Length: 339
Image (cartoon, rainbow, N blue to C red; front, side, top):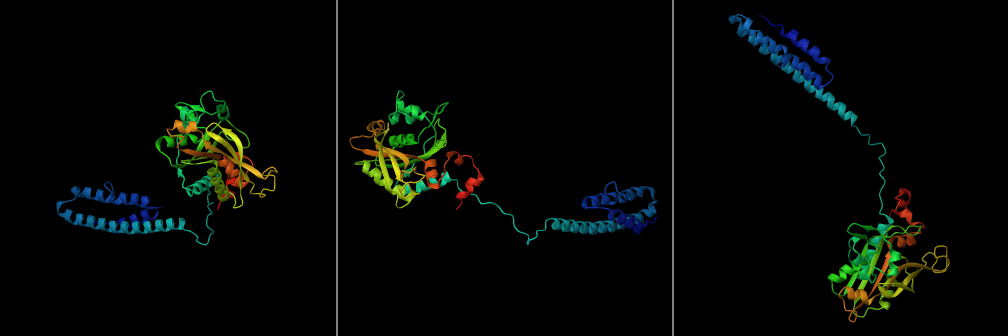
C-alpha cells in the first residue's frame, strides 16, 4: 500500500497557513501528529495490511511523520518570530517624544518647621524625647501642678478615650523623663496634642514643641538667653525677645514670650498689628512642686521650661493667616514650600 506523502504534506501546509498564531498552529499540528491525528490513524491501519507489506507501509508512515515534524517545526519558528516582531512593535518607544512629567513632592510646612526647631535646639545640646499621645491624668495634669479641682483645666479641655485621655501638651513627656533621669537635663519633646478648641488660629489637633532644662543655678536669664539664640536662628539675626508676666500652673514665675516682628523689623505692620511684637510661646521657671513630684530636690536644682505651637511658628514664618490651610492638604498651597 503506497502513501501519497507529498499530498498529505501539502494538505497540512495548506491547513497551517490559515493559523493566526502559535496556538492555532499547534491545533493543526495535533490534527496530524497528535494521539488522535491522521498519522496515528495510519499506524492503526497496520493490522489490516498483509504481513508481507507491513514493513514497507510502516517505513512510509515514519517517513511521513518526519516530513510533517520538520514542516511544523519550521512553521512554529516562523510563527514565534512573527509574534515577537508584533510584540516589539507594540512596545516600541519613540525616544524623540517628550517624557512624562511627574511632580516632585515637598515636605509639609509643619514638618519643615519641626525639623528646623529640632536642628536649632539640638545644636544647643537638647536631646529629643517623644512621649505617648494617649496619657493618663497624672502625667497630663496632676504632676504638672494641675489637680482635678484646678481652674486651669478649663483652659485645656480635652478628649477622653478608653484607657486615658488625648494629651493636651507634650509637657507630660518632661515628667516622664525627669522620673527616669537625674539632672542635668536638656530635653525637647515634640509631638501632636489635642484640645477642644477650633477657630482660625486654633485646631483640635496641633503640634507642640516643649523644652526643659534642669540643673544647678538655672534662672530666668538663662531662659531669655536661650530664646534670643532661638529666634535669631528661626526668624532673622536682628530678632529680639520680650518677656511679659503670665501664669502657668507648672512654672513660677511664668512669662509670655514675644519676638520682634521679622516682617517690619519692629516698626509696626499688619502682621504684628502695629505693635512691632508677635507672641510666639509661653515659658517660665519650673515650679518647685513639679520638681518635687518628679523626685528632684528644688533646693538643689532649678530649671526652665518653654512650649510653642509648631503650627503657630509656621504661620508666622510663612505668613499663613488660617491654621486650617495646614490640614486641608490642598496641593496648590503645599507646592509653595518646595525647595
